[in-house]
Picture 1 (cartoon, rainbow, N blue to C red):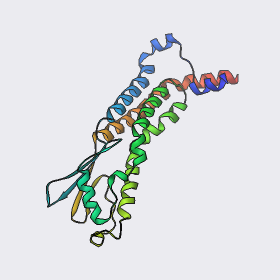
Picture 2 (cartoon, helix red, strand yellow):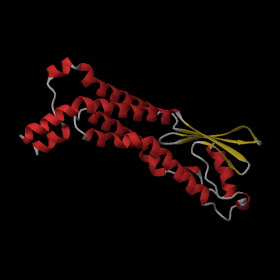
Picture 3 (cartoon, rainbow, N blue to C red):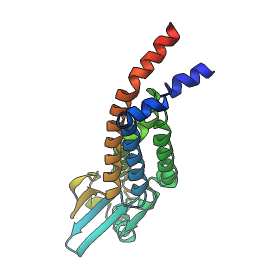
Picture 4 (cartoon, rainbow, N blue to C red):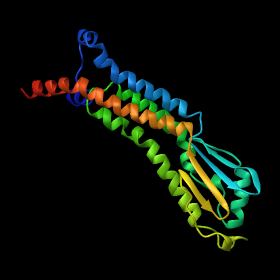
Length: 221
């Protein structure tokens, strides 16, 4: 059991070695610390914006998505969607919004744990965090596709709009409306966090791989 735990945690570094090579061993931890901070900050800012441009709305309509809730002109957009047979926005991604904050906190803990592991298992821990921005956009696209392609045929204006899938990023057209979708600060911060993690893993490997190989060679001998 102890051998298995040592294999997971990786080699232990002598304090004297750490002090002699402070930058080598400190860089991965510092980068992962920055990644954790950015991920935490992203919880409190928008992840995604969508603007609906139409002549009858001089200031346009705005939809803002956070990790755990929607804000903006949700009621007005739902009212418009009702006439073309689209379900209310609040019915989308209910599970994701319910667990979103807890998942992000778990991600922060996983990054923290990875900073204490000196083996390749650190990569396994942080991989979900690295992929999170892409998963967020894919999940958003799937929900928009599901709602846009499954319109109620009995809606008052069901014949006025063909099934549609607005782009999650960029511009598109839905009937007379132009949609403009942009990443929010939260998504940008989580993406930067993913890049910092990848860079941190590079320095992590450079710092601990020689010790890991030496530890394996010692046990094999």
